[in-house]
Image (cartoon, rainbow, N blue to C red; front, side, top):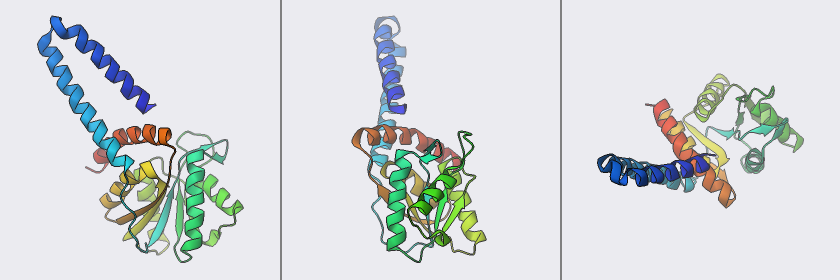
Length: 214
């Protein structure tokens, strides 16, 4: 949606600039400058989200699996990709606790955390190593509430491993560092077109993230 909206706004700006070419040249110049700044900002944000930080080999205090949506009580495609990633990580790192985090932002009556925990249980995960955080409605809340949950269970929270999609890693790690944590991540790959659209959306979401942590 954000990719389409960006293209529509760009087209509208070009049409307006053409309309103002002879009627208001100074206004047209200002419009073109604003468009150029916006294109550069969105382009830079998209590029940053397209290439997430490289994985750092650290043993975290705990790991967090960020939800990517659910539909009719089942994980969305992006969420299921993250769940397979988490399942492999649980097998590879038997001593690390995992927090699945996600509330019910759309008011569907079921939380993302509940859906993810159920999926992991059905796929043989050790549920004694999994905690559920079911109040968060955005990425900052995912990380903030998960940190509070980890602390309430006596876990250290200096370092965190974030499991999410590739396009989501840059913003998620940025937010974790704003919470004072050393952050690293494991990412699942996203198909090209979905990755492009999501990276454009992430560029806008990064503005929200900066505003939230100012």
